[in-house]
Image (cartoon, rainbow, N blue to C red; front, side, top):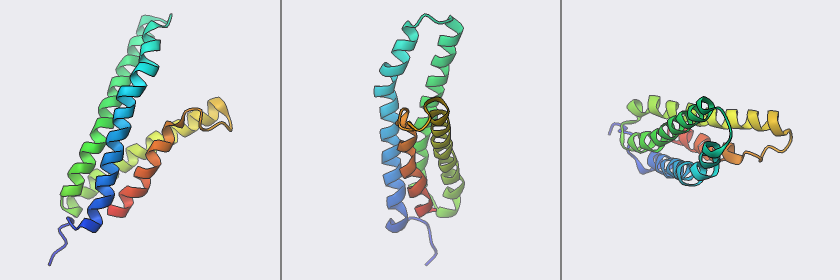
Length: 132
């Protein structure tokens, strides 16, 4: 019987990763927005800077939203077809991890948990290869 890539042994890491990615997106949207966007909108900064940050925040939201959607699709798709999508999600998760960690190190030194968001993506980096 050909491998359709739908065996439960291959799907559980993707469904788990999809649930985690959805939680990350929800955390960003419902906890991060009031914590970071609200104060920024009230800050005494140039309007262009504030609005550019606002645009970037919402683009980040859309990018984060694509991750659980892509993982849920990949969990149902044939393995061969899903691999490029899994590579996309893995690379985005790696980029979030790397950028947050580097900025944390640069801005706060050894206090790498000052911006702990990078740690949220580590499970995705582990789970996705289990399914590829």
